[in-house]
Length: 397
Ligand code: APR
Ligand code: PHB
Image (cartoon, rainbow, N blue to C red; front, side, top):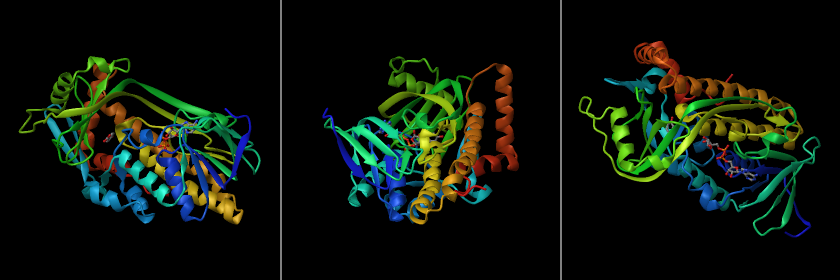
């Protein structure tokens, strides 16, 4: 490592090239604001990691408005609702009928590729494979970020604003003095598989089962994404492809009515922990947090990516007002405004999670089934789910 700084000056230094960091850089570019993005992983890693796949309709509208809708409109799948089921019963919750809008199925991996390509087209590189990222002087109006680049050079970015888009394990959150966090870890995890097989369903299936939750999602008309509730300490080595398909078939109701689950070649499998986590405030001085850096939801409500996008949709105009007009009003209200949506989605994700996973005793199981019957038979119950799942407006009051 060389001992001196290679300095650089920009308006906004963004730590992390996930969806929050890259979309923020794109929204800032549209406001005429220059940003530099640093990322600890490689481009190959960030454009291939498998994540969620559901976009709220307001998020799709936003992506289209800012020129990111082209491939999404061609390759995304528009869905009108979801199925909720338990042994012997499957119910369609029709979001479009209930609240007039649906969701889009478009893998986060695909959105990530679109974002990387857009930044490259704009001639704005991403500094990949950096290490030792640190933020400095966030209490002043000349904060900075230092890091070691992939060639071992110590680098320094002087900026007007620093944004931590560095996910749950990034360093930015810890830089906020007096940060408060709320956390819930769930006593179960998801085993997720990606399979080269046409989905056996037209809509996503969320299934309650005495053996544990199962879910049938998809990435395209040729690729299915499926999940099983497993023990958080379980080892993926215990799960042969045959065992996975057998469990999915049982929990998803293969053979009930005329429904069949078609197995196929599994191309990826892993076990994902489940937690809820909220940090506050999402801003200190000239440092802002967005996306997973500030909050984590369990995947059951499909809110993680949507929340990350909602954060940066709020933050970009706040930074623009601060830097272009010297007006800090939106920057000051960013944390409180963003956290109102975060807590709504935290509640919804927790509610879906606790309604659908097997834990606790038989009393809990009966409460879950009663809740599922209510949601699937009462219009008020179904509408509540639809409104939250398909997404509240981006400018949630
Ligand atoms: N320096 C630079 N980059 C870092 C550092 C660091 N010290 N630490 C972490 N990063 C990078 C990570 O490698 C990652 O690429 O920050 C990025 C954060 O990206 P994401 O984890 O994708 O978070 P975010 O952009 O907020 O997107 C949220 O991701 O986890 C899903 O469900 C979640 O869909 C949601 C989305
Ligand atoms: C997914 O397709 O990966 C997916 C969909 C909906 C969820 C969670 C994950 O609630």
